[in-house]
Image (tube, rainbow, N blue to C red; front, side, top):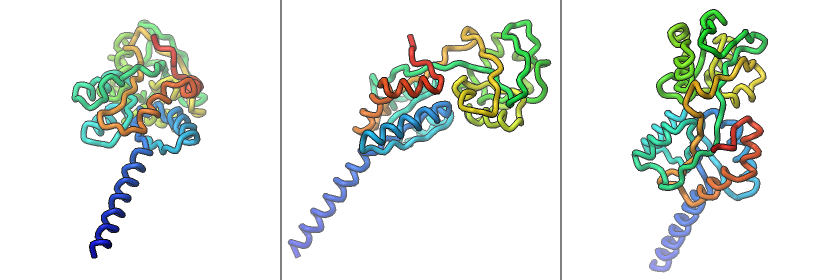
Length: 254
């Protein structure tokens, strides 16, 4: 009887060790929706090189930050702005010292393919008369692309003329889809989103001075597992930079 109990005990210990080892071989990345294509490609390459599974979750930075706050098991967080990264930092949910500015981006105005319109990025331009219908972008007070869009529209003195025609979406990729389908005649997204779509035209880029710098900070969460450290480093590597650059992200932040 004693021998059987010992065997059972050893078996349970072995199972627990194996489960913990397997848990450490998976990295969960929460990343802004605009990073979907680039992160998926980087993760696929990393999985070929390492015996580690990279699990990804893409949404607006605000949504992901709130999920992490509520206990979602993320190891790495990449935000499309500093606001939501700082939100988690202030709540002591990040690995101290791991926060770095990884990437930059550009804010652009898009239209459905073949329906681009004349555009001038100055305060005298009549934005309301440039197109008919709605303008899609992220939710204006929570989703980073919407926050940047609102800043630009106000700084260009276009806000009052267009605000009633704006449709706020759950993230930047949702705004892109609305424009692709022609449900919105214009959209404000990131240059990288416009680049991955064959169904929209990039009409014009907003002046960088019209909005806060578009910065993508990267950090480990407070409860990140051991395997996350290696993928965190990989995201900052030259191999990853080549992929980020291919999708149009700025990798040369000052």
